[in-house]
Image (cartoon, rainbow, N blue to C red):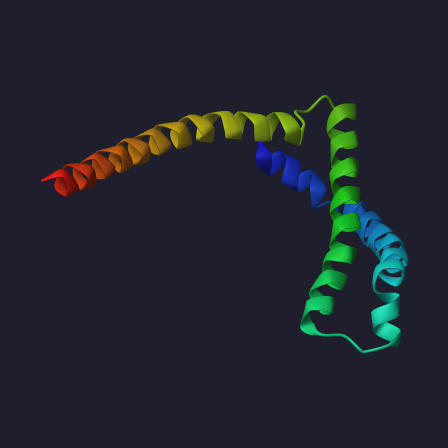
Length: 118
């Protein structure tokens, strides 16, 4: 199911739209958020990472909304449903693992406490 969603997300028209949105919106946000740094001190690696993320976020939002619109129009499952199903499955596995780790921790703490009382 997730493969279908990704196949839609990687269609040329969606990619091109997302790139255009990222360039326009990302540039505006980059100037608002990082313009002063660009004009004064120059950019460090930290700023380059932030600027990259500034462009990446609108790209992801555009891709997500376009793909979800197509899924809704074609009556396909949305990524929200796919992610929820995945989280439910992995959540049960994680809960079991956490319980095991927690029980091991409690046992170890009790051993330490018993050794201190000797």
